[in-house]
Each structure stands twice: as structure tokens, then as C-alpha cells.
Image (cartoon, rainbow, N blue to C red):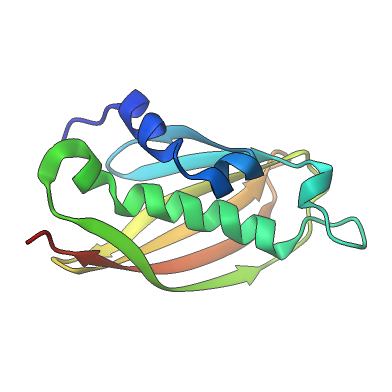
Length: 139
């Protein structure tokens, strides 16, 4: 599979929610996708911590990029959507940036499972998410 990072970034530039959250696609290979998000005031909750929704948004976006790589690299298999996700928040961060890295645990014709680990720029594990994808076959 030939991965064209510029094409992938351009495709996902249409994701206004992720763009407004400040998420950046850093690296893409067949084995992993890495995205980052600088922590800003908009990401903070009422007690000053990073909002769980901001962490989930980063994890979900990273999952979406990875789950759709085949389709984006020309294999014409259809779009993969999130069927279910489970996130565990492990600790709060004192860092300035969050980094999400996905790996594929299992990939079938229609169903796939990805794990996304979120750490901060201090290399502390902040959260982990398991995302189940369903590929909608092209007709």
C-alpha cells in the first residue's frame, strides 16, 4: 500500500471538528497513525484539567484516519465508520500536548478493531481507547 501523507492530510482537512480542536496528523504507516493536539484553554474543563471530550476527540480522529487508510490509499474498499468505542482515562496531564498513536488489533472484511494510546509530551500515559470499526462496502 502506498501512503501519501499529503493526500491523507488534505482529505481530513475537511473535518472541521478535528481542525477546530487543533488536531494534526503527524505520521502515518500501515502499522500506526500518530496525531497530536496542543492543549489550549478551549480543551480545559471547569477545574483546569483537559476535558475528557477533548481527549476522546483526539483518540477518535486518530482511529478514523487509521481505519480508513486502505480506502484512502486507493484500495476502494469503502468508508469505515466507528461502530463502538471504549475509552479509559488513566490520569490527568501536566503536559502541553497530547499524542495519540493507533495500532490495528484485528481487521476483517467489514469489522476492525483498533487500539489508540494517548500520552502527553512528558511521556505519561493519559488514556487508552478501543475502537470498533465497520466498513461500509461500496456497491
